[in-house]
Structures are given as structure tokens and as C-alpha cells.
Image 1: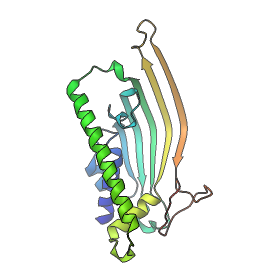
Image 2 (image 1 turned 45 degrees about the horizontal axis):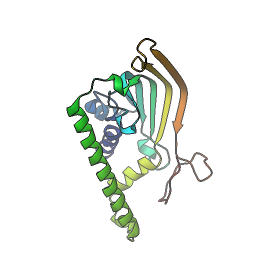
Image 3 (image 1 turned 60 degrees about the horizontal axis):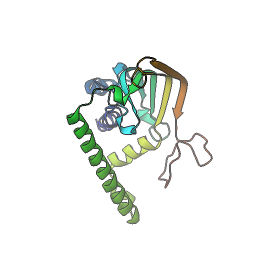
Image 4 (image 1 turned 120 degrees about the vertical axis):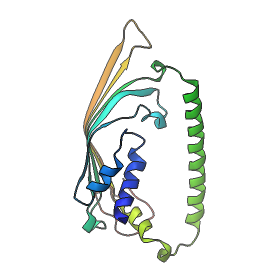
Length: 205
């Protein structure tokens, strides 16, 4: 159950901010039986808020998410997350009705996130300066680090459409772009694909 809880935690941590109705029970059931597959997930309207850009998602969905976990070879093969058929309809932030309370909450959440990031950076720098005994690392910590080091994310079929009827209501515009494939994977210092098996000071993606 240790492996399962780690993977479920990582998925919910990194995808829970972007998609709605992430079925935790479905993840738990599917992990040991092979590939974990989730279909037709709706994108959250707040999915782009963290990027501080002047657009907001009006509607969108993720067609299919497949998680491949090589349980027998976690130290020699990467965990692969394959996201397929992403569609997002975006609009200017100004086209969304202003809500003072939501704005206050968003500003507060942003401040808390910045403070947490500063605290994490301070702690990380302090821990890095201390001599570390590998024996002190728990099995769960080692496994979590191993998964993150070699995590591979593949995005296939990205379609983004942007509509703007705010800046010039008499002449609304719409633009879009598509991306066939995008791949994030671990590499060595020369940008060749690799699997990291030992502790390293720097990871290339």
C-alpha cells in the first residue's frame, strides 16, 4: 500500500489544481492492476491562475490520462504520465465578472503560497548545508525521490482556442493553436534521455 499511497498523493498534488472531479478511489483501485486510466476530466476555471497571465479558462477538458508505473523496475524505468487530447477555451480575465470576495481570497492564497515558497527555500538551503547521512532517509522518502527524479510526462494533442469579445465588442476575435506532442523527460548533462539510479546534485529535464 506504500507505493499506491505515494502515487495517489503525487497525482492529486500536481493534477488536483488543474482538473475537477479527480476520482481518488479510481486511482487507488487501478494502480496495482496495471495502467491507471482516467477519461473525460474537466479543467478547472482556475487552472491558469497560478501562471499570472491575463487569460482564464472558460471551458475545457482532458480526454484521457494514463499512468504507467513499473512497480517491478522503479529504479531502472521511469514512471510515465501520458495526457491526451487537451482542449481549452480561454477568454480575457476582464471578461469574467468581478467578484471582490474571490479576488480577496485569490490574493490571500497567492501571499500564502509565496510565504510557503520562501520558507521551503530557506529550509532546503539549511538542509543542504548540513552533512546528510543516507541511512537516515526513510524508504518512503527514497522511493518518492526516485519517482520524481525519473518522472516522464507526455502530452499528445493540445488544442487551445482564445476568444475575445471584450476589447472590441463590435469585432470579436478568436485565435487558436494546436500542438501534436510535448515530452518532459529526465536527461543527462548532454540532454540525452537517461534513468537516474543514484543520488545526484542536479537533475536535467
